[in-house]
Length: 615
Image 1 (tube, one colour):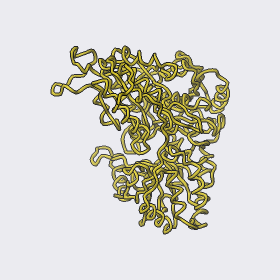
Image 2 (image 1 turned 90 degrees about the horizontal axis):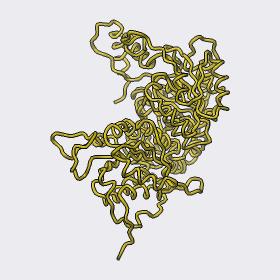
Image 3 (image 1 turned 120 degrees about the vertical axis):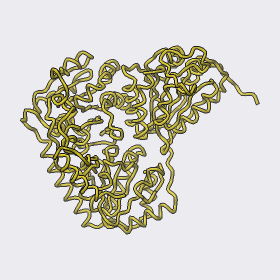
Image 4 (image 1 turned 45 degrees about the horizontal axis):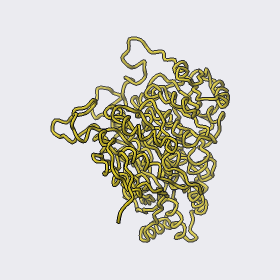
């Protein structure tokens, strides 16, 4: 049988293939790939750059200012789209490629789809070594792109144009699979990008990718339902998988019907509206007093779509009941069985429906529900107190959060990533609709925030996107302010200037260490820098303001809503104040031997805390 073919370069075939991948959202067929972020160099401009130009009306190409940042933006796009849509990123060989390795790790940890297309060495090796080529003295097949291997769910190097066919098919399986989902790296040898091949026309047929919803195994389902029926004090931990499965309504209905309190991870926050009576708020190290009180008493934890990392479990010391059962409802068996859990391998929405059907008339006791409601009320009082308006010369992070919420409300989509703010936001931000709380805290990547805000805005252009970050993160990566202005993707960015890495400074001192090398004043210096963030942001085209108080910040946030382009508002904050209410222990190893009495005392406390840790 003769196949119809079309002669294209490998790069042209890749670009055309991406335009043919579709999905259906709310009954409308849309492109699966929202575009390609590209910074061109000699390793991709002639081949893939030319190919992207040919499809520019079907597959938009976005120019960024930093490779890591553009990959962060692409990841945020996928997260804001609940993994239903995604983006690709391309760079040249060398530093452009390795700049993206951190972003690949971020996507890997967070189970988020990202197609990474770096240029690579010449497959022919005729001109070796080319500019920016990394040479291994003992392995001629190695290139800089091998750094992507441990942080990619699937890695391939395209050394012949026909290899693209199986490679792209495998790539799409990984990018769209709820269990395997993560970054895919296809390293594109630069000579092969320009080589032609007779590709079968069937390779470019439209393909619609819909979310797979695996049903639970009958035996696992029976065991999970039996465990729930025997429990007296169950809780639900809602992770990011609830949002990615679009299971928020199913979670709400299940919790209400069964009377089970719900607590949220960083990735799962906004699974329930903040004002839902069964929403106990954040859980774990950065958790609310309500969630952590119930977690400590719980005899069963239904962990839905969560990796159960140390911040969620208080380093395995939060859940204290002697007879504790964990049921892991997750599409990924690796996650479903963590902490010796009873695995329930299934899609969150499908799994909740099946679990509900097996529970009959069972629900929790009125006494347990009342305990939850009282704990929630006490926590909300504490949260209101710390976020209330203040005349402090240097306000706390919590007071800034209160001002942002009063000015913009729960309808805003909040973006953050690293430092002290995620802990305060996890506890205190009143999230509204699903996905309105966008935190990258799986990899806790400083510098994600502004680029992430850009990705969210591209995915959800109608959202009021507010980015919160500290001066440390701002200085690490701020270039995509200029990109947001260029693309007309308006953000409101609030920079909390506490003059250093204040979160780690607090941790350093909490473990007995001296204040050293974190705040600018405690680092080696000849002169303390006086950084004018307002002028810096304005120089990149943003509207920029400096708030001298919480009241001014609130007023400026309201003014910024009318700005035509990205706004940056700077406010000085206290580096030492953090919310004392809520929270739980986190395992940060303290030196066994030290000359400092403070470290010795911290070590003694640490050894006591270790005794509560489950193995």
